[in-house]
Image (cartoon, rainbow, N blue to C red):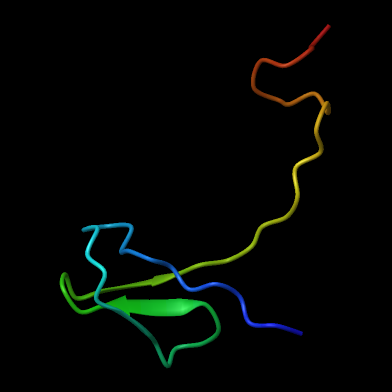
Length: 58
């Protein structure tokens, strides 16, 4: 299995000084703003499937 892509910038401050964190898979540290965050894959979206926020509700 191949590795996932790394984030290019911090979602909080936009800086690019990111390093993997030792807190587990998908965790990153931003050394510019001193924040830690986790990235996770939630799943795939089904195209054409009605959504619960204003889709094809009858």
